[in-house]
Length: 172
Image (cartoon, rainbow, N blue to C red; front, top):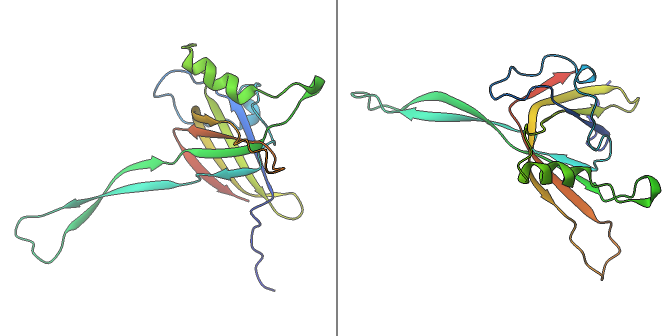
């Protein structure tokens, strides 16, 4: 029986307010269910990218060694998580503005800065999580409104970029 491939369209994203506000706080150790209650845009995202980690590799030229260069590891760098969703109307036909409120509070200087921990689950056909990425202490790096065009009937899509302090993958 051949192995099954994971489908990229069955996923769920959860963002929970982080209880850690000081710089250099330890990484997320408790499950997100035990983190802050305040949710942000749960399950409403249609697209996710930026599940990346780059390791800096530095060259060290050793004197007298002419047959090559020594390669050494540097720091890890995490890409921003990019989430996209359709703009939607909530209860009372009011536009859901939670992403915009978050970045506007940061821009306005509200302190302490609200940070969000996240979980991104990829599901199998039976709606069981087969891969889970978690990230810590996310900050809004960019929010982008929809591109408006009267010539098309496309859904208005907004985009959120989240800078964060750690990304981990758990399987099964």
